[in-house]
Length: 456
Image (cartoon, rainbow, N blue to C red):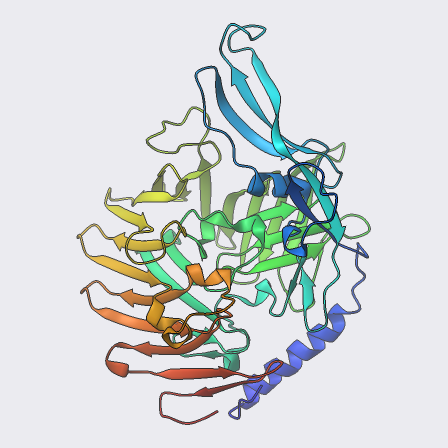
């Protein structure tokens, strides 16, 4: 990394990270090889491209590759797309639905299993030189490195940009209570993470603390999604707890079981904020509590929740703190948050895929506050990608690349540009203030021109 201004504190942190990396190599792995899964139609007689194999388990492959059909006159309540043989065994994608017509064994009595039209397959992941396996994917920059990069300040530049990976990170405060911890802060990362956490509840690449989650692959690898967008990897120990993370990850993950040993949930102790998070058996966040005893509890939609609030079960519809204050959420048909109501009854409205970005990309494009002021977000503006020239092989992540932001005064506040690999190449505020430019070399080398025009 061609950064010349390393102070003593940064040097100490870099030394710590190097030691942590060495120690992580000494942690025994619970799995010698990782399976990656896909879902296909028919018999793949001649093999499938490697790009098809991108899921850590077969259930996830079915959920992402096979959409649930819409209800019909006789068949309703389609739900629970999954692999028929479980997370790590070859099978077929199936789902449940209810039959309400005369050909059923009895109207409303047949919650039958239906073939979804695809089968599952896997391969053993082998990563090429220069990449690292993380949550089943071969990556140059691990998804655990997203977020504000608080322990590697020398890499965080501009507004801010991680110059090691080219990741653009942005935090947006929507609501914060005057006291306590009730808040809604959106976190954006330009680089994609694991398929497990593409909920898109607030648009693609945006995350919030209340959507932290745990997902068990069924092959000894457990993924943990953090509020700032990081995706952490833990491996099962030989027995008991805790699960084994990389040496540079200080959080603690524990599997919770009942007397017979059945999974009941997960507990994650986060060093950031000195908090404990509790999850249900499916990995959904139930409770956040800190050392002072303050708590925030999550409520999710059920099959009986009115469609005007949530179109499906399992969506976060309320967060309640220790003082009884509550944030309430409603959703659109695409299961994205349509509005949030704060404890005073004021409403915040979210819009997606408007003129601020590519159609159908799932981007958050507008936020309207209770006073009717707005913030507008722009994505993949042609002039901000590869200097305005077409990319011969553009990264699919560019569809969700945040290229601009207009503030509550309807003024363009910031602009970011990207190369064809979806790495940030410049960052600038209005009127050219705070301009940074980045030039990515081979390996981990990055040169940048700072706001004073100095080359680093």
